[in-house]
Image (cartoon, rainbow, N blue to C red; front, side, top):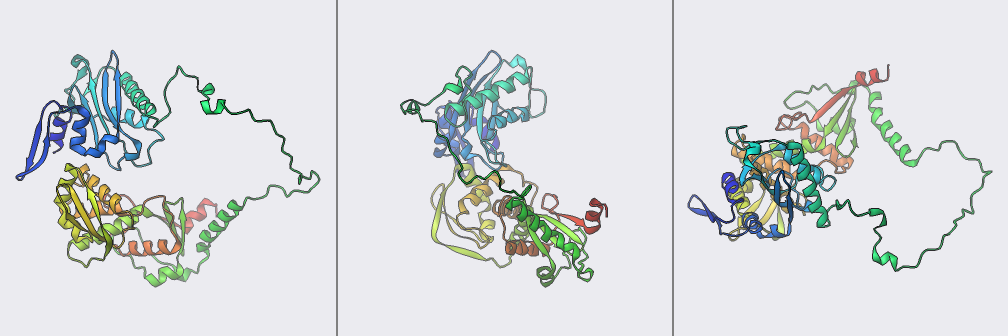
Length: 434
């Protein structure tokens, strides 16, 4: 399907059909470029696209970029074509991403469909056996042209500040302001000010007092009785920590809305809240797919979703595994599905976002090395887990940590990233030269 799109997108003057297992996946008529993209990814893409056009003696650029509001969490809908041939180029991708600087939330990627016209004599296509990587003569100039053309396109459609160097921004006064009478200067006097009043030197702001108190609570773990020490080591496997001991002796605090600080007698553990919840959901969903009981919550009113052809193909492939994991998703027409229930751990109102993220994960191919069950469980976990930046109450932190300790592999994520960083008391003492 990826190869089909790489050929069909840059050739709107040719009709294309794709059939899979006797089912027609695509039937693309002859049309123009914008309409071809909408035929492939859905009619709602028409309002998402911002046109880009630039012609220079070095290179010609035309095509579309997606509005920042519709950025994806995976690198899916990103297409470069040189002389109508698909290419991959991290350098050019960086040029587009830098044009979206400060417009995209962290961890999201812009969509783009960009077509380059260049003299074949100025490029070398013999870089990679698949011919998807090329070498251009003047890469730095192409980078600058691409970045400025995308930035200007976003500015032209009031999405980013304009790059019009001929206009002096300092005198760009709106017409509505010119019609208003000038404001008279005013003098404000603080009548309560007393120059002879004694002021305490360097008062401490209230927010700093709060932070100091929080850290006092955190360091209090170092003074706990040595008999309460819980001996653990960061290795794979279940830890000998009883839930009652955890609730009674551990201290919890959230740091930077990303990490959970857990005080355990002679140790301080820092837990990545997103990776921890992802590991919990991954193991839980894997057990469900193998026949474990499923806790689901019924929607009061079934939710209806419409997907494009690529998304329908992806969701159809894993719908059976999806429904074993607490979802109840059923086909309802050609490209429409109805969601009757979701897993109990899923927050209300997040259903559509989780499904779209799940589909993007599957289409990205990043889970290709997993078994079908692992692929589904991993995609659900990444899309439904608690994200960095979410504020957690102490009760939520305790529950999350307790569930993590009951996981089969609590210290590492599915991709091998560490979930827990352990700091012993003697290491902290050495920092203070004790």
